[in-house]
Length: 201
Image (tube, rainbow, N blue to C red; front, side, top):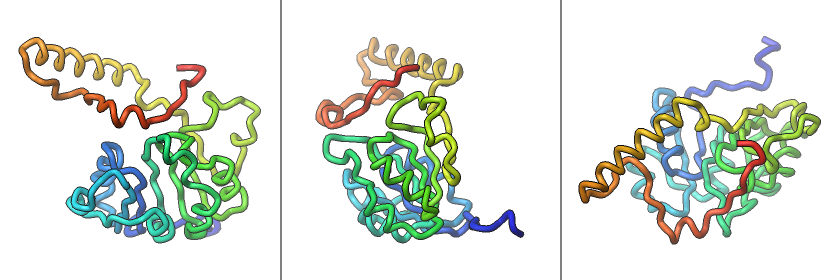
């Protein structure tokens, strides 16, 4: 029993998703068997899209405060850099799990580490302010924080899949048809996105 101190069942636990693009929607499908109530904060989407996927559209405060597990998929933009900070982490339930899966800059990273250090939340991340993380960075030894390399899209089979998609779309374009597999960049959206290169790719 001692090994289960501080844990909770994911089945039925209220879930929050911050950023409901492709990854957020795929996560929603993945967790359906667990019968979670799912709240979503995404100011770029109308409520109808969120509701069609059996989720509850909510403001950020409610999404954080009412969820036992929070998944963050939001892209970092000119307007939202660091928008989850000390105040927002304090809104979360004691012992809640916070999974940062988009870009480090959407959170105040120091505030997240502080919330973990003092035991208010547990967290997992595969993104960091500086990548790769230095071998002697204290973040590597922080209890309550699970670290993972941001390498899911860097596998050999993922690169082959990207190539297959690009070739298939190129063949459509050569026939005078619009591409179907690759995402077409919207200049208005792309101009708002902010990211930084990593030292090792």
